[in-house]
Length: 140
Image (spheres, helix red, strand yellow):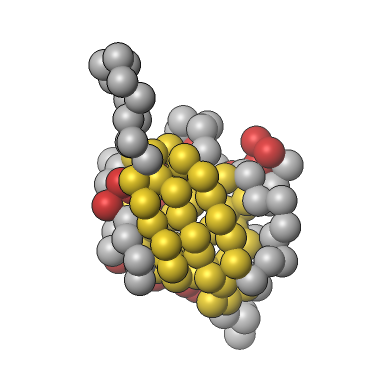
């Protein structure tokens, strides 16, 4: 399974990334070492959307805080960059994909990443992963 992380990324050109106690949604809590992840620099934090793809080199669930009934699962992640995005993909490019029932990979991404503005790790379908992978190839 492939994943997307949308988070504050202070150095978009880094070769490795570390994220602490990241919120997970839509299957994001199942992320593990060896999984493919697409990194989106959060527009909420001054980023511009898709910047890179990578491989998870470390994943550790964060323990829940005692005494709090409802908690979103969180994970610590380490990621090694494998490629740099060649074309933009972010809120502006996905805003037209808003018919939540149309089954398009762009709609899946818009829903999971931008319907709720929080930064997060989400699991994505194979179709959505192929859709994102096209942004690492030059246009012909």
